[in-house]
Image (tube, rainbow, N blue to C red; front, side, top):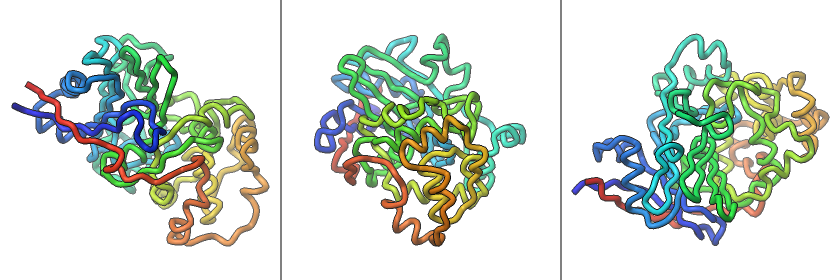
Length: 342
């Protein structure tokens, strides 16, 4: 009998911080079992006794974080399951590939990272129109079954009954899939502000074409720091986040022009002396940045630039975000299960 391997981060893991069951499946295991993505999620749903969010991840593909940084891996399907069921209309989405084209690179300047850092790899971001089915603009990147919502292409999971939630930015998902270490804690004001500062792209993992680099999708002033500020988060350790951001810098990406004006992008650029397009940051974005102490005067303050090695070594003090953060080995907060497929 064929079985499908899946990784569970159970509710209550990480000293009780995690309030929602999270399940991750490697695309290679789905292919080895001879299943479609939907069939794989259905097999997991039959095997798992409760409610959970499910992500299928392709570690050979690439995606883009909400702030415009390319990463080597991608969520290629996601689902919500509850006691063996997947809602037939809203419970599952497979993410279509975004083919390489000169037009895409011309319209979306942050995608020039593709040629420099990940040539030849297949790109998956958010759902395409054909993936979304009957969803409207309010839930186009979301799956819902029963109690569980899996939102923003597998990066924000809710229990809709008790309104518990967890954010899983893509670096955290990568670390989970690679069975390494994750940083877990409470988002805090910096991440709450940062997740609204995005890049313009067609079919993004979280946002679409409405807001470009230098702008904020939140547009909520001093309240942006509270939007997600008290929610648990699973992220990659800060040296890892710094490494991926530096790769984008190496590819010529300028915060505020090509990639977003997020607190992480700006703080790291300031530390290493990398250019920033501060003139292109909108008034709304400045209001949110200033609410967490990131002012134009601070960003323009002369500082001795750090080397790459120094920036990585000091990433925990340079990169803002995560309250009461703690490093966990994924192997110590997860379980391996096998779902019967036949």
